[in-house]
Image (cartoon, rainbow, N blue to C red; front, side):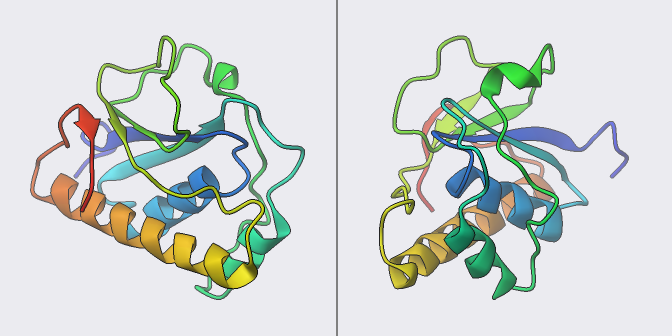
Length: 145
């Protein structure tokens, strides 16, 4: 698949400190042949959560170069798919196709639960990667795999 055929996917959550950072990292690691991933938040935190970085290190994925970004920082970029994990409706999303993943925000829960959320996101991203490899883009609305 050429870069122009890859799907631009934006993962959105509230703080861009946990869920969307994990999803972007998994997509970059597992789906670089079909996805050009990015992530953003509606109210970005100052840094990636320490438990998020630690949980991803357990999967041998580093978030050292990652930092929270506001959805507005995406500028005029247009995405083929937006995966909304924020639990809120997105106003004027930078794309035509938005799906929602119902994923618990792990920012204030135990490390063990943080890892369970990480594993849920990993599974969701892997299924998205498989869909894209089959040439299908998820439809609008909520998505559960």
